[in-house]
Length: 416
Image (cartoon, rainbow, N blue to C red; front, side, top):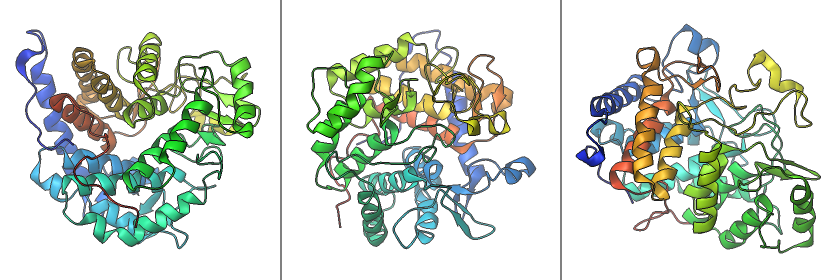
């Protein structure tokens, strides 16, 4: 468990731009202070454009990642206020237990997306458990016990009874205009972590199904006939056999190379040592960290691809090399650095942290939401909170030489 943040050691090489890293840490903390409100951390710095596009709200996934970064930032006020946004989300929990995708504080209105935002509840639960282990604040698990129990019940209702994996509609997680559906890599990496954090029965079965279904190319056979049938189609047709598939559904699967989902598999205990090394080598070979870390996919889905959906072109946002379809996200870059640390690649992690700092420094420390995957043009919203949070998590990981998302060893939240 990470607890103490200290300055980066001086053994990283004489040409290391330490001033840039120091500035990045300072600017990241300042941005979170600037975006912090009594209700929690806004997704982006308030302004006319941010308000017009709904970024002046408390988003569950953004808040959870920011909460973890705030608790590990070394800044006393950020640590003290790390749980505020989680309380706002909990207050707007649906009667069935679902945590909203976001809460519009000005309108006092919760939004649950079109077909259900499944990862909001997962990230909320993860943040509560990790803040409890960090004591930021003490007693947070007890204060949220009723809410977390209801959230777990809602998620359990989405779990396949035999495969022990969550099922979802497409475009209903963080990649909210991508066609991943059925059993989704990213979502189930988070689900396995939640099951371990809250001691929900069946975590081992979830892990086994996860590896059998999302990487069906090894000799590991799926335990059930239904899982074997699902795995057969990608086993015969998938192009990339080194990465985990982004999703598996009936006679359809994703092998575009979901970078975030694969990084979470490494960080959240789904990949053994061999799978971890295979995954990290494949991502490095695909140069998902080229120029700036990290691209969201290895191969964008094109309009000619069978996976293409008309909604992906909405606002011309998810065209190739853009947004979730191959854009570069500094937030994901933070997880890339953490995965390098977790796999023992400390020198590479230090180099990538410098590149991450340079990405955030573009536009006079714009902390852009994402960049075009080929032209590197800054896109999305400026002053993005979780871009700063990704940097702070990367700092904490590299400085401790440990994974801040590892299962807490001293105290954890329990299934109530």
